[in-house]
Image (cartoon, rainbow, N blue to C red):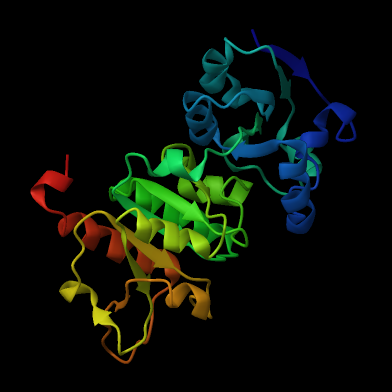
Amino acid sequence: MAHVVEVGYAGDARLSDYTNLTDVALRRVREPAEGLFLAEGEKVVLRALEAGYAPRSVLTEAKWLAGIEPALAAYDCPVYVGDEPLLREVTGYRVHRGALASMQRRPLPALDDVLTTARRVVVLEDLVDHTNVGAVFRNAAALGIDAVLVSPGCADPLYRRSVKVSMGAVFAVPWTRADPWPGTLDLLRARGFRTFAMSPDPHGRALPDADLRAPVAVVLGTEGEGLSAAALERCTETVRIPMSAGVDSLNVAAASAVVFYAVGAGAAPDDQA
């Protein structure tokens, strides 16, 4: 059973998993290297536990303890309890809903395992904004996407900001790295997926005119520059979301919601099971 430990000193070495959380460059390297990620907020912590991730420890204010302690009953881990100023001093910011959990990462599944039953897939090439990555995962979970593949240059879906924005959807949607890249797009086509490169290119097929029946893979590119030439040439066709009022494109997370909805709405009845 988890054991509660009162802490009163921000320099306590036992809290090292939670230090310097605002240093993105440091945490981006440190967390995968040490095999951990951070879940923030009561709901997200509970969703990580429900998904089977094992906690290394928890750091929380006392008022949030009752909400998460029952879910920790099966784990032998410390639950560090401190006041709000201490959490702020340790982490460098005001912790959302007063609870953080350091969770143990699991090995990523093999690409073949992720694709075994997937019919609707999203592929992310080099998205570097953690907020956008988290939002895409939340949209994917809400709108019936079966799996997410992320290129080696894509931001970490288990980075704290991604997990928080996704509201724990990164635990609900199967995902893995698209490695080799961009060769994974060739592998998808070999498995019968039609791969649609989403781009504002006016020469692309308008989304309402695209054949979105599964198996289908939606390929989204990095903020600003969009998909690389190497990715574009490996896709079945380029598809655009029709725009009006002189707007040339949408934020990648907003665009993902539009296309995911279209993929679900365009599915044949036998694809919706």
